Image 1 (cartoon, rainbow, N blue to C red):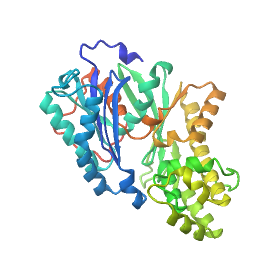
Image 2 (cartoon, rainbow, N blue to C red):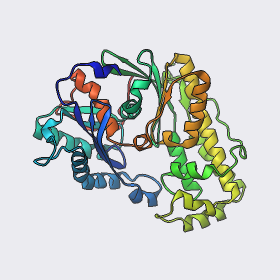
Image 3 (cartoon, one colour):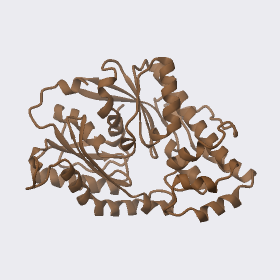
Image 4 (cartoon, helix red, strand yellow):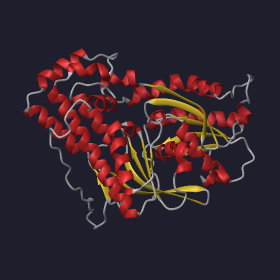
Length: 391
């Protein structure tokens, strides 16, 4: 990766802090590629009874977790105040997620990062959460990906489904948004369908596990062509030509449940699944009809993502693919994308499973090129809940 050839006289150590949604995370990464620590405090157990993230609860939990999580990350990296190791002054910078995300949750991380940077007289670096997901792949695979020409990044999670052209020049990454969802994100559709069928939260791991026992051709789902909306003045709402929509398939699953009298079995399963139930334990609670429905839903979503991602890669002449975000942990997605990339001779890379979901290592990694460029945040830095990435 060319950025690592830029001379840098410091330690190259960056502390990253991430609190955009329901995970409080801190990590120390050296020169954007070597993890010294990566600590994540999950709030799944807190939000699971509600079937989704409750913003007020998320903010409160971030307040409780931020100090011990950062402390754990520093200790794991041997950067403790007054203890054995290199000491906090070895850090070159503090990096924090600026957005997008939940405003209250973001403010917890930003407030702590600003205070720590001020106390240590270290520069503060603001990172876009979506850029962080892209660097979750680059952190481990930059050396195996083309260094010239554009890469196409699919960021697909519970809150986002975006396609970006990513190009590296002048020691900095530049992004252009060429695709996005017009309604639900893919991961959100997984969560909602899992909840509809009486399964646990988050829905992705449940469907990933159970779908392997069903027939993906049992229920024919399809996606309609999406046309960009046009304002009265003739302007399109987006210049991104590759659009996704996942609200329709969620509605189609609901219609299937209603027309096939599945309500009673769903209610029974919902009563039997508790906070301690694992996806593997739910297999005995699902009849074949439910398993087939899950397999068909997953296949349809993965196929839509695959079809549009590779169409975009061909359209823009991408030299490689980066697939990141929580849904990138899905086994069928990894398998089908890898097969399609191999057929086209296109390099493809995924993050490690520990880096697919929200984490702070990706924030620290994304901050490294910014440190080299002297791209520091002002003291007025605040949360930007709808922060876009690129053009």
